[in-house]
Image (cartoon, rainbow, N blue to C red):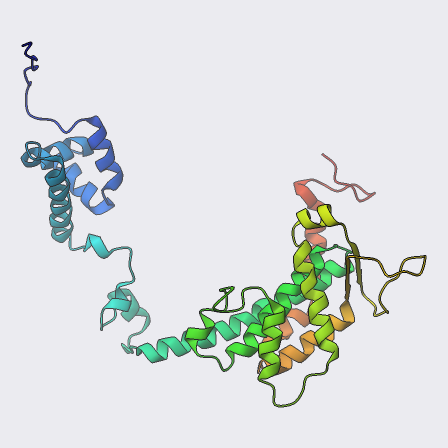
Length: 314
């Protein structure tokens, strides 16, 4: 039988270049700095030194050994490496030093208080998001951005509907709003049904058709359906009857949006959300600064200077 020849080992056992590269990536800054000290300012040399007791053991045991070395070095540096990426103040009953510096009274919050803060925070930000989408959508309508303007206004109505529901819903329900089955996803028809069911007085029936018409734009949010099935899109800044073709027939696959209807719907939802107008409206109604800034960025469309005829020059 032919016997295999083993090459004689030279010098001390080595981890190999691949193992050292993996360790370079895995080591935290604190541990790496400690190993550099042992390696005379050379990280690879420090890894070699620290791994000498582990080179003769099995690979699986070697991995555990490296973890022990990392923990020992971290403990020596006063840092708990396994938990460094987590928020320690959320696990500890006392606040850490950085939090205490911002909160010298040392006030801590109960879980119920934190949950209520999250619940109210969602309500507040849902209103803010909804109003920002609303103003952006109106801007898009005035610029004849079809059908994107309708999609943006769909976001606005969705967020204000969720704000109305979040005003009284528990946090567990709010956390599921995004889910298409447990919650509502982006379905404003389902949101509208839930909203109406909670009102003490009947909601005017005209809004049912407005909601349905706006939600239809979700079908052409992306161009695939529009290209495959075609569509007649009508988005206007004044309120008219359903658009008709010149031959007097109502077109198939009609997508229609009239901004005054959306304005009335958003007014209804904002009032129902429980929002305090002075706290939310000044930022979106005082557009002097916004128009000034837009005039400043208008000439640099696509990052290029705009010529006098309105086209961007290269």
